[in-house]
Amino acid sequence: MKKITNKLLWIFAVGQFGWSLLSGVVSNWMVYYYTGSPDAQNPNTGIFASGITQNPILFKLTLFGLVLAVGRVFDAVTDPLIAGWSDRSNFKGGRRIPFMKAIAVPFALVTIGLFTVPQTGSIVVNDVLLFTMLMVFYLFMTIFCTPYNALIAELGDTQEHRINVSTFISFTFIAGQSISFMLPNLAGFLQGFAGQAGSIRLAVAVMATLACIAMLIPSLYIKERDYIDSRPSETKAFRSLLKTFKNGQFRRFVYSDVIYFFALTLFQTGLAFYETKLMEIEDTWTFVLTATMTFISVLLYPAVNKLAPKLGKKRLIVTGFFAYAAVFLITSLCGKGLVWGFVIAVCAAVPMAILGILPQACVADVAELSRLESGEDRSGMFFAARTFAFKMGQAIAMVVFTSMTVAGTAASYRSTAVVATATCLLGASLFLLYNEKRILGRIEQLKAEKKA
Image (cartoon, rainbow, N blue to C red; front, side, top):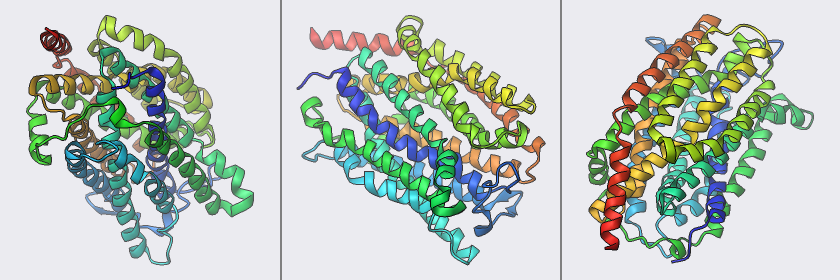
């Protein structure tokens, strides 16, 4: 086997930029462009809203909220199926890379379609098209991300490499998310070429093309069989999923992860609205504020990377939970003006650095321990099980947000930030049950026994 280097891990991390950019375009801007109403300062808010059903249909649940939620549930259900398929595969190119290579282009194309195809003269047809394309989008994201995430554990052959690769992909993840916030800026630049609505679609197409290239780079460069001695798992998908959730330490991690992603998704979905409706600033400032947050967060990466082995990932993650709760609380109380946007951006940089890096390393630790104890490598299923759980949190968050903000009032948007604060505090409490010392100690013990 060839030696795994930090250069290889950086090349691998480029793929995270690609799928993060596509995910960011959809999660950060679909609700913004498909719901709400325009105003003088932000004329593009709800620009596609007239094409789909907007009124609540059941107990204040909107059709769009339900469509997004079902999409996440569908995605969460397909995760273990794809993970099981990947774990059991034995392609010439490896167990993971062939999936990533095959789906990169279709994944980018369906992202463009989400902002283009549901624009017929019939609202019913548009609703059906939007629903169908979201299902396909989430399926394609699963086919790329589940094998990709499994490589985090497999390329992280040591504790140092697991923390390093988690740091690198955290950087490329927030880089992709940050670039996605430039969508209104890019659309504004292109408006002279394609008109108001057309410029948004063209901006999505430009970003999707960039994302596609990034996803193909690790797929084409990394020869999986040269670095990983992988053998197909013999456990079928849902049996493997059940075995994964029987792992007590993994369950303790997942409890808090579901809560965290519920709170974070609630906040991220509302971010554009917090800025435009509460702070009353233009949506083009979203990228500037996100870039500020990202820049400060990246500056903190080396500190997180160095402190994790010394203080422990658990202690830092709990700190991150409380820091995010403080950010959400500030948002719920914010006033008008750009200064509030910068206050939130600066404060959010700390938990973003911590929680962007360390949870993935925790999953890699648990997967490594399971491999050493059982002799079976089911890394794909561990990351899929985590995704299965946190996407349930995301699905619920999307339903809650669109339901709570039907009125479109400032108070309704503030209330979503209050809910995010409370749930993040709950997530911190649940993560205290996770026993990191026991996991790392057992890994070292089993490795020592194997060498002996």
